[in-house]
Amino acid sequence: QVQLVESGGGLVQAGGSLRLSCAPSSSLFSISTMGWYRQAPGKQRELVATITSAGSTNYADSLKGRFTISRDNAKNTVNLQMNSLKPEDTAVYYCKMTRFGSDYWGQGTQVTVSS
Image 1 (cartoon, rainbow, N blue to C red):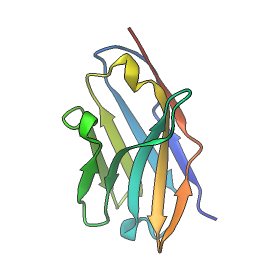
Image 2 (tube, one colour; image 1 turned 120 degrees about the vertical axis):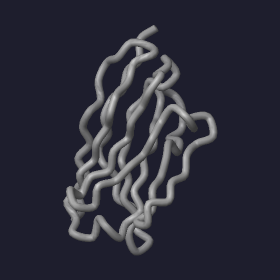
Image 3 (cartoon, rainbow, N blue to C red; image 1 turned 60 degrees about the horizontal axis):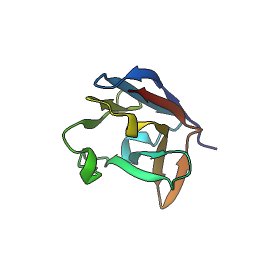
């Protein structure tokens, strides 16, 4: 069973920054696609960003330029750098690992941006 542990969430003022990290308990991390998703209250879960094993990235259009996804295969971690945060970025942020067609999710970390 793969476990993903997210960290780095918290409360920040608008305009501030946060860095989320996710550490999957899988030796196959380096060949997996990793992603960050978020879910705000009353809304559906949505894509934030993904990064393939080769390092190719994909972002939600509305977040390009503010959020950056990265991975460190040596440390088995995927990170999400979030800058210029806005109140509408408030959500639970989830890490996802995809390998061999199966998805594994973390339990999420709360990000709250105050105005």
